[in-house]
Length: 127
Image (cartoon, rainbow, N blue to C red; front, side, top):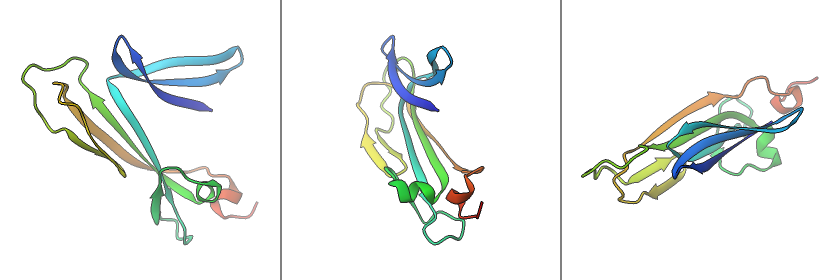
């Protein structure tokens, strides 16, 4: 199991991951400039294999019906750009917010991936 978090590294927000290893917890920072990580699970409520809606904080039943994950990152430049005044409104899935007017260039990257290799009882098949 891995845990992802945003941590300040030299005052630069950084995407980091931690995982259990035989010797304890192994942590590694992956990408500088990541300000936000947002994940929503696509829930197949009617059993047709396609997501009917996306849940930000899914309950146990929704986790069992999850068929996709929508992942969004808000990434900023590592240093401010003099005179930059680009867009401040950003949307990551169902989350919208206004960034500071601080000279950093920001961009949203997002993708949706199918959740495969689900446990048979989770996917609705018999074991």
